[in-house]
Structures are given as structure tokens and as C-alpha cells.
Length: 328
Image 1 (cartoon, rainbow, N blue to C red):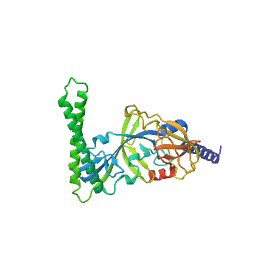
Image 2 (cartoon, helix red, strand yellow):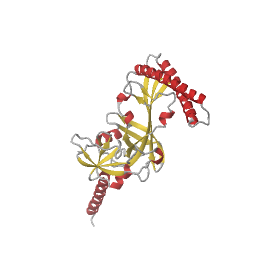
Image 3 (cartoon, helix red, strand yellow):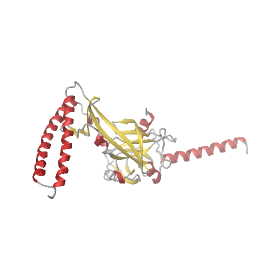
Image 4 (tube, helix red, strand yellow):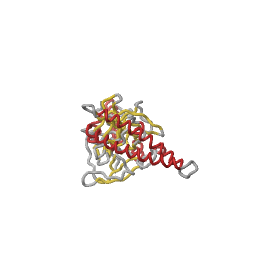
């Protein structure tokens, strides 16, 4: 065999191998689709204040311009998790550059900029007024339970339950009064800052892996995470987001873990399934949240990665590729 033929054969082998590799990266089997999915747990809470002890935490802002569940410590808020799907992703398309990167959706409670109130002073005043009404109600209930305890004895049916409830009311009253004091102090300030705090964790093989948030895209509802140890599980299939858009129409495949919004934390599983869905004429992918949550990767019927379902529609893969490329 001549030298020229050897080089031609070598080039042909390399081209075939490259073609096979590209096809494997661009088209996913159902097993690869399932292995790309990961469960993401997020804990979201907000704070309003100026720093130090002059701060009040809350779950989110309400339509009546008040804070939901204001408190002096975020402990109870942090213990309320939100679950959604996400997927492992390569930083550079077609190259194994995941290093623990996960693309998911910003939690619903934090998905829009207007979640952060622009007039914190007014909201603080309204929340203080609302709390004043609530403390009066709590005092009335405490007075009623105290009267019941006074005229009844331990031997009476329901006595222990009422006594326990009375203690709960006192705890709630004390916390409400503490919040009132802090809100009153905050109203003396010239300006207040409202901040959103989000803690992300990915659940893999029954383990909770801490992550850090690398980037958030409010416009598309995207969030890029990375495990703190920068490791991707050996069985995970990292998807490659190619830098050009692909038409999303007709029948699609959505990979997600079903029932995350219905399942208690103690029994959350990270086994994904594939669902058939159709893109509507307006370009939106409508799915029941029990089957496909925001953060689920979307594929064509041939297994080509198209983008991510963000709860409203499909985020094109080129947008995801841009976020990965521009990561800070």
C-alpha cells in the first residue's frame, strides 16, 4: 500500500469516527434523554432592610402590596423547598466539558423581575398595618383559649389540644410583635433594599449535591448551575446545545421526573421519563406540570436536542449555548 493510500485511509477513518461522534452528540436515545435529566431543589426567600439586624425576611410579595409570611429569621422559609427538572450540559458543544454544569429554570416564585417590589417603603408600611390587625386577632384568640383553660381541667376532652394551640398562638404573637418592631425601625430609614436569595441543590442517586449559581437569565427564565466539586456523575449524559436555532414544531419529546410538585421531599426520586408533547400554533409547549416541569429538556422525535421548557414555551438551544459560552 502506497504512502498516499495510507494517508487517505487514515483521513477516511478519522472522518468516519468524527461523523459517528457528532451524530452521537446530536441525536439522543431515550436512555440518553433520561440520563440527561436531574432533579433540582431550590429554596427561595427575600429580605428587606439595610443590613445588620435591620432586616425582615419574607416568602414573596402579594398582590395587596404586602410581604407574605414576614419573619425575623429565614429558617422556616429555607425549609420550604421547590422542585423542578434540569439537565446536565456541556459548556462547549460536542466536547465533554460539563464539569458539573446543570441548566434549569428559575423557580416560579422568582421568575419575574417584578417579584421584587419597587416601592419597599410603601410595602413595609402596608405590611406593618396588616400585622397590627393580625396581632389584635391573635390576642383575642389567646384570650379565648385562656378562658377555656381556666374553666376546664386536664380531664376534659380536648383540653391538651387547646393548651397546645394556645402555646402556638403565643409563639406566633411574639414573632409578629418582633417583626412589627423591625418594620417600624425600617420605616425610619431613607431607603430600603429588597433582595432575593436562592439556594440550589441537585439530587442525584439519593444524594443532595450543593451547587453554585453561575448565571441567571431573567428574560428566558434560565439558570446555570455548577456542582461545587465540579463533577458530573459517571452515568449522566451531558447535552450539547448547538449554537444555531432549530425549528420547534409538531410532536416533541420531553424528558422529566413526573410529580415533583406533588411528592414529599422524603420520597422524591430522580428517575426520569419521556413524554410526548405537541407545540401549539403560537409556538408554546403546553404540558401539565405533573408530567413536565420547567427546566425539562425538549427533543425532536428523532432525539435532537431542541431546547428547554421554561414553563411557558421552549427556550431555543442557541440561547442556552450563548448562556453557557458567556458564563462568568
